[in-house]
Image (cartoon, rainbow over all chains, first blue to last red; front, side, top):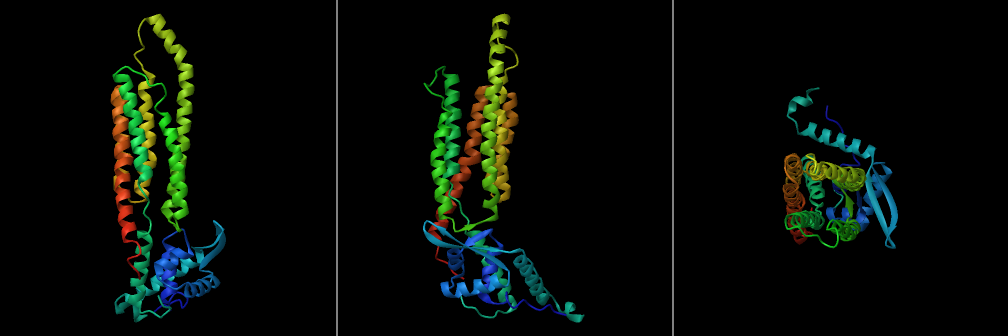
Length: 100
Length: 222
C-alpha cells in the first residue's frame, strides 16, 4: 500500500522551505525569501505552520538594531522530510510495490 | 512561489532544485587564502634570501604573519556579517582553522622553548669541538610547520569537496617528507611552494568562482 504523503510538507512553498533548510545549518528569513521567491507575508504564514508542526525552530533576535529571524530544521522536521521523500519514491517505483 | 499542491514528480523536482540552490549559495571569497599564501611564501623567500645572501633584516620577517592577522580579522567579520545562511561546511571548517591557529602558536612557543634550552648546549659544543654538530635541530623545524599546514588544508579540501585544497594539503605533506632530508634553504623553497599551491592558487580559484556567482546572483528564481 502507498504511504500517505505528509500534508504539511505536500505544499509547494513549505516543501521548498524544508528542502532548503535541510541543506543548511540555519538560514535567515531573507535568505529563504530570496531562494524561494515567495512574498514576505506568505512565507511568514508558511513558516508559522512549519513551526507549529514542530518541523522547524524559529529564533528571533536583533542584528545591527534590525530584527533578524533565523530558521533551522528540527529533528522532527528531518524525520518528516525523510519519510516524505521515501513515500514519494515508493510512488515512483514500478507497480510491483503496490501489490501488498 | 505559491502555496499550491504538487504532483509527485513536481515535488521531487522541487526538492532537487532547492537543495541545489542552497548548495550554490555558499561561495567564500578567496582573498583570505590568497593573502596567507602570499604572506607565508614571502616570509619563506625572505628568510631564504637572508641565508643565501648573508644579510639580516632589522626585523623578523615572520612578524608579517602577525600583521596579516589584522586584515584577516576584518575580512572574517565582514564575511560573517554578509552571510545570511550557515552551511554545515562553515560550521566545522571555522573551528578547524581556529584550531590550526592555536596549534601554530603552540608549535612556535614549543620551538622557542627548545631553542632556549638547546642554544647554550649548541654554542658550548662548537667551542669544545671546534665545529658545528652533525645533527642540526633547526633543519627539522620547517617540516613540522609543513606537516601542520597540510592538516587544515586537507580537511577543508575533503570537507568542502574542493580538490585544489585537497591537493594543496597533500603537497604540504609531500614537501614535509622531502624537507626532512634537505637543507634549510631547500626547506624554505618548499615552504614557499607549498604556501602558493595550498592557499594562493585555491584562493585564486575560489575568488574567481565567488565573482562569477556574485555576477549571476539574483538572475535565477524557482
